[in-house]
Length: 106
Image 1 (cartoon, rainbow, N blue to C red):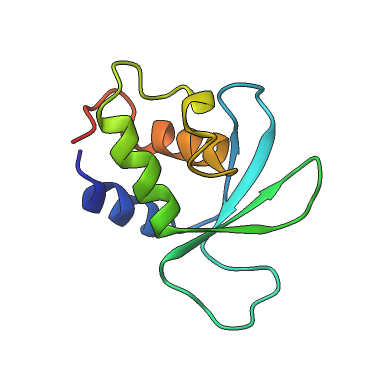
Image 2: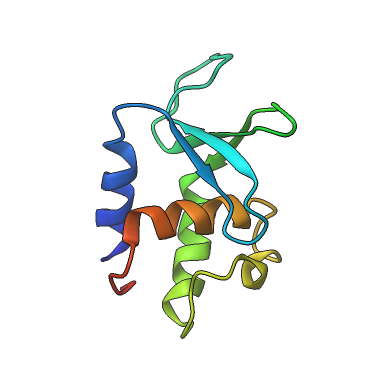
């Protein structure tokens, strides 16, 4: 799966998702809409960790940085590898694993 296919699949979510981080299994909600919208953005996902309930936005560029790094990894779905790229890496990697599954990252 390439990045455009991945991002289109993410943007096709019809409802909010409740996922868990792969490393510590912390629940978080994924939404295309902010709970406090100011200006809607098409290239952002909103993450709300259940343990803090504080929404944060993750831009497409953060996803893209992690995706490009993951393409070079033998085991791409280990979030600790990407913490230097973004503090949101555990959420991004969990979403990637949910969408990509066992497919190869191109």
